[in-house]
Image (cartoon, rainbow over all chains, first blue to last red; front, top):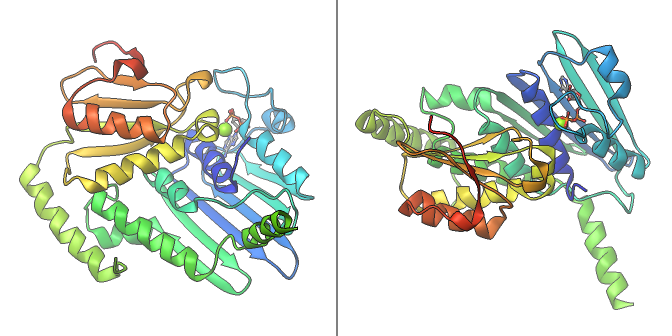
Length: 196
Length: 125
Ligand SMILES: Nc1ncnc2c1ncn2[C@@H]1O[C@H](COP(=O)(O)OP(=O)(O)O)[C@@H](O)[C@H]1O
Ligand SMILES: [Mg+2]
């Protein structure tokens, strides 16, 4: 149902914000030698209590005022589908860590997609600092709204010109490390299939 | 287009400071893109992207774009709320990239509510 992993990431980080977090750490590692894509989303929100944790990957469970809770179960489904796993580590009053592992060369692995707008969407939530690190083998990109806010000396981070700057920064950084390059393989595969 | 550097960020900062000092009020228009699970799956993030691109084309610094949680109506997602100072908020439903651009150009810039896309008008606040 989520077309891109970056949509899952946005959705999981939205949970963090609902849980009162004002700090979210997103880390993505593309390890081609070990064939593992690892996505960690860590927050300092209120944590998940045991009763909820037991039922959390059931798509019909939510604590919010609607009928189904889908976010975590959707991500778990994606992980299972790609020979991976989803782990949740949460402590009340401290925060939550969601760790997704997927197999990089799995045919069903969704594209990473638009991480830039995912990060911008989280920044636009307001009172939350976002740290984002992305590793592709040895290459590394790092982004931290805390540092940028210091540089801004009180100018709001959601100022249109600032946003545009951030957008370009992240775009450039991800391009330099060829983030999400596993999709090249996919487009090769498609081109190959079309050709044959 | 040449890439921006940290020096550019400083320039942007200084320009923005002057602007803010001149304006010294709050934003006149607030656009809220709702980011619940259903909304994200149905394209809310692409709507946000389109709106930011439209905003970038104008020179309006009295428009703020924010994101918020889900409004609890999965079947009407993606939802966008437009709040213009002195007017009741308008919630739009079933937004996509194109409709979001229309909402921005017509409602946000010209003040014309696109009734065909409206979900509900909430009570005067
Ligand atoms: N980071 C988090 N911190 C605290 N509670 C969380 C977090 N993530 C999820 N939860 C809890 O788990 C429930 C299920 O999450 P999810 O599957 O995303 O469905 P939904 O967000 O629609 O309820 C949430 O309602 C919330 O109570
Ligand atoms: Mg959720």
